[in-house]
Image (cartoon, rainbow, N blue to C red; front, side, top):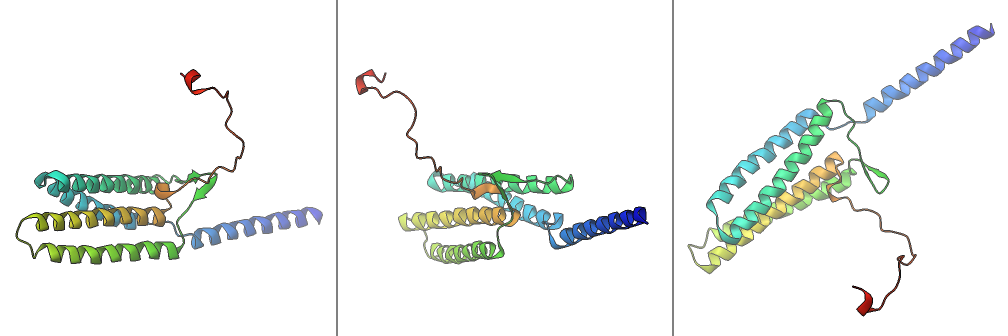
Length: 193
């Protein structure tokens, strides 16, 4: 009888562990490959568009377009890493200051999306203003404003993807709590070299 009780208890324990694992798998919804593919396709289209802008622009407008292009390439690389980790069943984890980075709470993601919408509204207004000028310094200044807004939107999208997929692009390490003075020998200025 005792062997049966031990076996039954072991089986019940195993069933409980398996049930907990199933519940954990069902409740944790990792990013899907389809969603990542859609995000990657959107970023790659923006890269192609920005490369065309970079080729036709000059001066400060070209510099801003190149900064936007680099932001997009960084975003693409970040999303590709996450995509490849899903395809190869690699649990991609990032540890910053001893804490694992996971997807941000929905409120933070929604705030990032609201920031993007706000900047897109500013961009539309800047583009409308630019279309009213036919040349001169005011047109150039207006085009710079448009280029700056486009760069800001790309940086905000990168932030959103970082929050959504739990990637540590904007992670900041914890400040040091050490109050000890730096070690070393104190010397006079003339003896420092």
